[in-house]
Length: 369
Image (tube, rainbow, N blue to C red; front, top):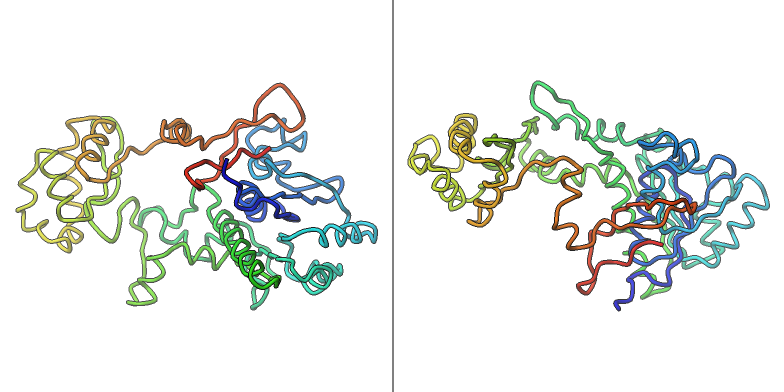
């Protein structure tokens, strides 16, 4: 059996709600021993969050369970001398500490980077915050929606009529957590070479802008301001979401050959010689007219049939699914992506959680326990 990549690594997770707990969960999925450290009495706010009110009232909210499976849990009052001393003892025996307090909070408690690295020079200390540990916005509070708006992400989401729109899930929190998990593992690699710990400063704002990729780089390099385009892909056409006989289908015919194949399969080979559509640039200029023509051909079959026909011919295409339908895909079952665990308080029900999107040596990562 493959050895987990982070086996033997101990992580102290002092984080709350999503970005930090998500980072800790990703580390746990790779085999790290993650110890969740919470305030007595209240604990992580996410314990009260999620779609099942009864679970939230029992401090086992679905939002908490989803990102903390596989972690051990302790409570420490960090404002109490005994609690601080207990954390220092744990730090001496740990490899990583995650925190997402406001910048400076742990310093005022005597538990910041300087104090903890003195206790453990090899410690990888990762601080996740909305804006980073420096700069004029460092002290501002930030949740996912604040970052989505401030990053410009909402300004390019939706159509010209509906933007700005928030993404339908907490993408800025998730990106910040993923950036933190990546940075922690990189710091552990350096420590393996030099024995040197690291202070890792993760900004959710910068993580969001980084993930926006071509939207930000096109503006920085060309000065072209991005705009909301709904389900269209600004880099190519036809590339977006199209109506079929019974539902929606995403098609990304970005290459000339893919466009020609698409036209042939939908019975509209004439489109390849139409002067509005012969050149990729012209197709973008006339994307609305092209959409209408493509949809007239797609109307002959349901989305699931077009998905198979186009994909088999090398044209990227797939249905637009609901979340329940997506999680029921045979592809995910074949890769054991959704895991079933015992419920943490021993009740007679199972807990379904997501596994890691990464396989190692051809094997899925072990289920969190």
